[in-house]
Each structure stands twice: as C-alpha cells, then as structure tokens.
Image 1 (cartoon, protein in one colour):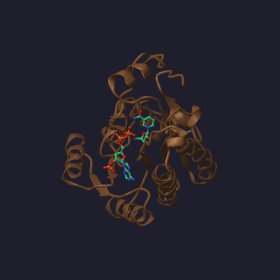
Image 2 (cartoon, rainbow, N blue to C red; image 1 turned 90 degrees about the vertical axis):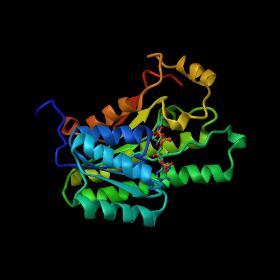
Image 3 (cartoon, rainbow, N blue to C red; image 1 turned 45 degrees about the vertical axis):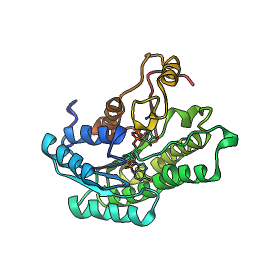
Length: 252
Ligand code: NAP
C-alpha cells in the first residue's frame, strides 16, 4: 500500500463543516482528493462560497447543505441530497457540536436538552443514516468527534462532558455492529483546539488551560483534521472502535 493518502473519487460528508474543526476536515479530505459535502444550520452565501472555494482550490466537487443535525427530517433530507448529488458516501465526519458551560447547580434543563439534542441525538441520527448509505457499498469510514472531557470530565462542563462520553460509547457499539458490513467507526478526542467553540475563554483562561498541556500550546483545527484523514483512509484499515486523543498531552 502506498503511504500517500489518496481519496480520489471518494465522497466525504462533514457535519458542522462551516468553520473550526469541521471546515479543516473538509479541506484536508478535499486536499486528499475526496469530493466533499458540508452542513451547518444555516446555508447562507458564506457557506456556498466556502464550498466553491474548496472545489476550486482542490479540484473536487462540493456541496453546502443546511441541516440541523438534531432534526431527524432534516438529517434524512441531507443524506438524500448527498446520495443524489454524488451517488455514494465513503467517509462521514460526525463533527457538529455545541458546548454549554456551567457548574452542575447552574446547568439548566434547557441547556442539558440542547446539548443532548445536538451532540448525542444529532450524532446518533447522522451515524444511522451514514451507515445505511455506506452499507450499500459494503465499505466506509465514520469518524465521530468526542473530546478529552468525554474521557476525563471537566469542571464547569458537566453537560458537555456527558455528551462527549456518550460519543465514545456510541463509537464502540457502532464499530461492533458495523464491522461485518465493512464500515469502520472511530472517534477523535481533541483537547483544547483554537476555534470559535472556545470564544468565551479570555486570554487568562486560555493561559491557565495551556499550563495543563504538555506540548505547551493550544492545538490547531488542522491538527485534528490530520488525525481524521488518517482514520478515514486505508492507512487505518485495521483500526475500528478506537478513540484517538489529539490533545498535546493535556492532563485534566
Ligand atoms: P465550532 O468552531 O463552534 O464549529 C461548530 C460547527 O458545528 C459549526 O460549523 C456550526 O455551524 C455547526 N453546528 C453546531 N450546531 C449544529 C447543528 N445543530 N446542526 C448542524 N451544524 C451545527 O466548533 P469546533 O471547535 O470546530 O468543534 C467541532 C467538534 O469538535 C464539536 O463536536 C466539538 O464538541 C468537538 N471538540 C472541539 C474541541 C475544541 O477545543 N474546539 C475540543 C474537543 C472536541 P452553525 O453554527 O452555523 O450551525
């Protein structure tokens, strides 16, 4: 097998692909030759432009979709559109997610529900649809976005930590169920990555978190995308059910 990752002719769908880690994954997978579809809740001109830029920069086809990952009807329509446009799905990056912060007593029922709707129900609904499409071809790779806090928990992020722990269970269970259909399911568990998700963190808070990271810096979205590319590719052909930390040696 060549050590160059080549996804020419393959199709990748990335939820939450309009910015941050999702957009970095879309660019990375396109750079490797895959046609890409991205979704976010809004399908505005900016998202269309992002998709067009990916097409022209990497000479692949692209599609921008409006879909709330927690809405079952919208999820079905999004996958139908991917199937209609590209006729196949090889790689699915289950990335869209939100983070509600707050200590346990301050975490409202509404915050718990919205976190679970997007991060847990949304990820599961999308996983179901991706597996259904991939099973037609008898192969595929699904990469779910967990988090270091899903493994170890973080103070002030109890709802978010709960949701990201669920992704690890979902990954292990789905990997077992889908292996006979030739579909691998893995997760990445990023640490502290410089994206809009952390826009509420001021510089002092960032510096405090960085003291817990052995590599001494925040991670970049592209560094997560590199791991996603590996798991998407045949370089990881014997890896399934795994959760890969991408955290610079963070200790929480
Ligand atoms: P981000 O910069 O806030 O981007 C989130 C993306 O998800 C956006 O494209 C957003 O677009 C989309 N999105 C949010 N809710 C959605 C919904 N209900 N339906 C469809 N799209 C939705 O976040 P990020 O840092 O890239 O995070 C990506 C994933 O990595 C998340 O699952 C997050 O939990 C995980 N993660 C991030 C970090 C970190 O340090 N950044 C660490 C560990 C894990 P719209 O708002 O336009 O819908």
